[in-house]
Length: 120
Length: 123
Image 1 (cartoon, helix red, strand yellow):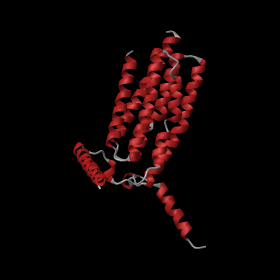
Image 2 (cartoon, each protein chain N blue to C red; image 1 turned 180 degrees about the vertical axis):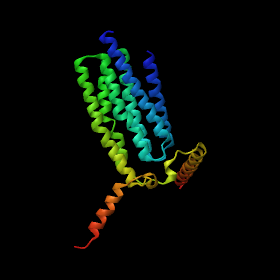
Image 3 (tube, chains in turn green, purple; image 1 turned 135 degrees about the vertical axis):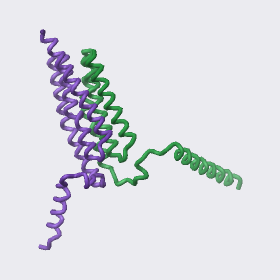
Image 4 (cartoon, rainbow over the protein chains, first blue to last red; image 1 turned 180 degrees about the horizontal axis):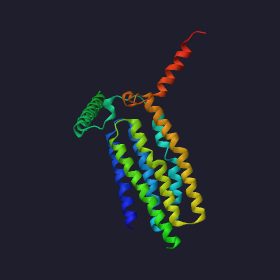
């Protein structure tokens, strides 16, 4: 019981730290290795839960995770390109609001234009 | 001390070691400065951590067919993790994510320069 709690706490802490790296970046490759690590931690976590309850029905999950876990990194790495610094970070709420306002203004302009065409 | 208890203790030790590896890898991935160092940290739970977790599970359930399935899981993990790491490392090198100042020796660049010199020479 205590062993399960300690191991689970260490797994969750490791996953949270990896998640922080996913949020921070700075490049998509950093994010993808952190996500790969979270997949491995998930495998250990499923094994821990199955060992605690002595259940056998979650073993196919382990097989599936071990088989397909690498596809995400291979795909991202295959199509990775040199990305500008500006695009590699997550936008601040102010920037998202500014982008939204710009898009709405554009949509309104298009709607007004179409209404004008109908009148002709 | 019965065998059941001994196996359960072995399972507990395996899970504690696997959990510690995950924690250490999380700290490494969070704090290391560049892509290759983060890859180094991130692969710790990917192979040894997963194998320790599967060994712990095997010690706990102690049934024949399950052990073989777990061996298969470990085998798949060891087959696929290097493929992913190779692709990520290659993409990182080609897109300039590898910081030359942090490397002690960069054999790939040395070999590439050598190959370039050889192909540039006239026949």
